[in-house]
Length: 234
Image (tube, rainbow, N blue to C red; front, side):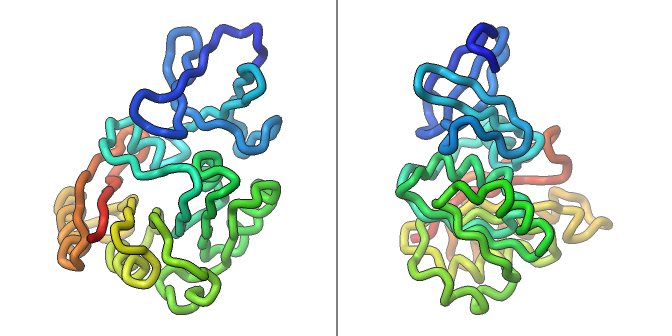
């Protein structure tokens, strides 16, 4: 937006790397643009001094929706390594790229070749993203491509065994004390069962694997029949 427009930007009170953008009295979340002058998915850009900020749209990002719905767990920090399962065309990946900065790394796994091509086209100038065309249900297939244990796993994969998929990747890639988020879509698991029943079942699968679930939050109205679960491992 033009500097003449009425807006302000300030660091978020609780979340490092997140900013509160106020436009005409309305607050939005945003991140500092790692590639100034370039938007990723049509989001608004806000220039303040030498810095530029990107509005983070909760209707396009379940991670942002979680934060907007008062999600209490925030694990991101500059310089960390992230394994992102279900990267799609890169909307949320791009904002996490802003947060982890030039010293961080995001291994972006996507099964759809078309979506990954779009991600690469959108985010090719972001050197902290490593795109991977792979099946997240088979972590052994891309184990050799990730030369480290990561600090955090974020998963947004709409398929029937969502929590098992997360657990398999946690056991393969997440370092001790690492954190995770998973966006669970109930309708991808069973449309005949009430969403809350499915969410509790999926949570139990994660906890049975020894993971500590700290927060589970419904992210409606941004995404219906979805929760985001946040937690850590020992």
